[in-house]
Image 1 (cartoon, rainbow, N blue to C red):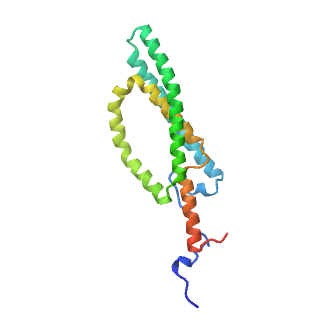
Image 2: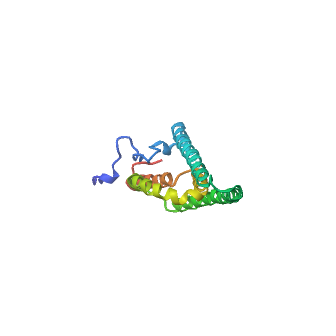
Length: 183
């Protein structure tokens, strides 16, 4: 009898190893209590960031328009309200389109980890560049904050993240290819 290839041997547990995803760990696999607690923690964090962003944006806008005449300020406020309503919907739609595109071509577990690492490397530079943009964006900062709130809300209301779909597909491919799982 011929010996089995290394890819045909079963690991000690008899299953392919579940990959760990950024922010979700391995909880994404079973969608148990720990998974939903992590999702709730992510939601709480994004809601806190949204609240701080809106507060900061409104304060910056108020400081920018504080010396304007009452008529000009009222007109600018109405423009901000209309623009913010549009921006919330635009942010929501942008995130949903990105999510749909992510589901069509979901990243694998390694791609998710690399994307997270690259994001963390870029963040300090983006923060530094953003400070200079605040002076330019002060008049429209409430609309920018509204766009972010719409994006965050759409991100929080998805059933599964693309990274979960990609990891699930990767795991199924590993199970089918290596013979480590026969379910």
